[in-house]
Image (cartoon, rainbow, N blue to C red):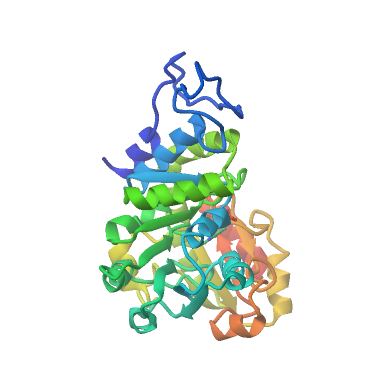
Length: 379
Ligand SMILES: *Cc1c(COP(=O)(O)O)cnc(C)c1O
């Protein structure tokens, strides 16, 4: 089945008691038992909820996986994966990833004795040489936020294969429309559902998708024991959001392409980061593992002062100045002071994230209007 069809039909079953085509919002905390221990598979809503169950089924299907688990946020989903580990275990992760992931690793889990090694995963030889007999997990993000670096998922999967090391991929930027890491050998796919899957900037949620039943049991145990579950209303919103993922992503990609090229030709723009450019360092890998190149773009101005970047950031009208991405409306963001402020400046600069970098989440408005808005702001 093709993705667009899957997005609409995944996990959709008419409600057995009424025939309702949409899964109802089961706003309940508990379920009445017929006799002690006799129930319909639902006991208490932290452990099971029918709206969440329908969503988890849909998440698994759209990522070509067997099992889905939904969490109350993207970072809660990441948190659950790290809780598979024990003190002394080592994680190899990308040196350019979502700031909140970096914060969770360095500020929370390092205190519990988990060791994180940050490497440039765009060169997979770095992953190979960082592996020790204590390595239990490799965590990658591709394309990365905000520099759009690309890591070869299949090549990393080949490195960890047969070594009892899990490969987890944060697939938030690509969405299942563009890329399916499980098909490329990953063990776990993570999403900030808040972004493209929700798609309407109205919900915070995360998820994990996997194929291995034992791994699913371990992660389900963590989900119910630690309790970071999403509410049924949020699950309903995401089930609804996923239905239009195909048309939305198609429009994000079309607009992204137009705007990336337009920016690149703008006399005041120095550099544009977008994986669809043939001279982008990750282009060949992106072309191999992604179906298109998405609507996330970062750029630097020729006048690279923070003041000039801030002036542009404050001058757009259709592009709203906000954190987050992946909604139908366009957003503009200053990673250095917003999404990536939790990364020390020295680290940021070393990884190529300059103070003047501007990130766009190109929405699905008419491209002409978006260009006019950017043109006025850049001046
Ligand atoms: C937003 C984001 C997260 C965190 O997800 P939340 O839903 O905000 O907790 C993780 N990874 C990436 C790439 C993100 O963009």
